[in-house]
Image (cartoon, rainbow over all chains, first blue to last red; front, side, top):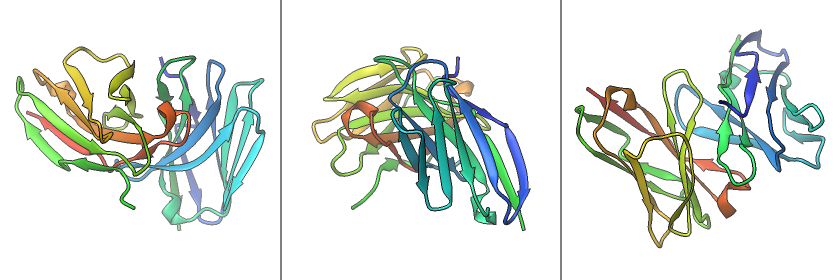
Length: 111
Length: 113
């Protein structure tokens, strides 16, 4: 079963709006990573947040982590058409196990 | 500094054949992970190589095997191809067995007919 599950599965917004997507996971983690994928191409690393961090910023991206709820959120502010992509969270599957992707959130930003 | 490279870009094979995909990690990285991504799905972890050994493995049959070379590059081999093996195969490199950021290659699109 998937360790990370993104929510919602799909999101459609207008340029300039903010987009928020969430990730829930099941076991304890050392870190959580967010990736972007454009049209079935390779994944681009966006941000890594460690288990002892609660919030992290990178440009228009803001990631939060709540280890008590085993959840993370990715906020993209002032979205652009170029932000149209699928977004995945990546978490370790547990001690000594693989890194597990969720199914992703597909974001569509229209101009 | 070249990022992660994969070859070939596209590949068409027939059921029952065997295929080898190749990956060169980002400079300074010692860990290579392979993922299979079916259309519309998230990447599924196949296995991870570190110090030339398979360290972690996902839920994939033995038809999927790999190798890591002393220069940290890696190969993914799939035997007895099935139609269901058609997918985008992604290679990711990192330091220290994936505890840090993974950097992905562009992928190899495998089509099995």
